[in-house]
Image (cartoon, rainbow over all chains, first blue to last red; front, top):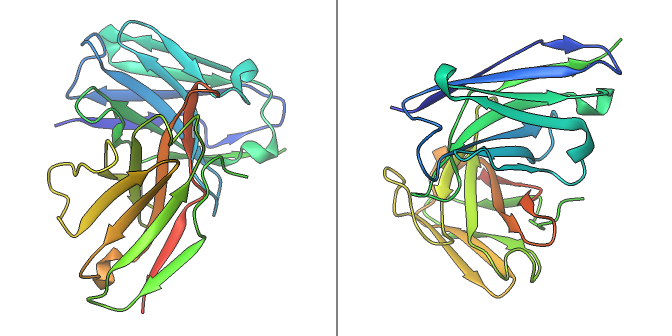
Length: 120
Length: 110
């Protein structure tokens, strides 16, 4: 059974850097075709894709946020970390991590999400 | 402003068939598969349709997806009250080199 869980601060101040960790089980990020992505959703708004890291360490970022994002993986710990710099109140959202593999070619299993508020 | 365009709302009565559209462009829907997600308030999205018209294991066959040109549709037949949720389309955009989502459609079962 594949599960993912996001963790990190619930409140960050403007200009600070956000670090979120996705801890997963039930799959290996060293298996060909597997990836873990991050998607966020501001309150009452639509989903927005942020980043994706593949089993071979290929990384993809949202063009609009690329300069602020870094995604890394620790295969031995079954974790993926997303950092977002220069946080702003508009970055207030629920942040999800999700599993991706070649079976569905999409984010098929999602974590429960973690709400991050940006406020001074 | 989402790259993929969905109607903000849709509605139907129990037993009806409803469709939700998703409009894109040649760089996204026109070249790639479309995916559909169902999301209930306060919960994570659930994959409903992958590769434009395939259902993951466990998804009822009342849900179906289709794609034509630069548009896609999600159809729900035999509408039930438990289908009341938000629905999102998604695909890869070759020009942006990234995943894009629609703005979401809130489905109300009257």
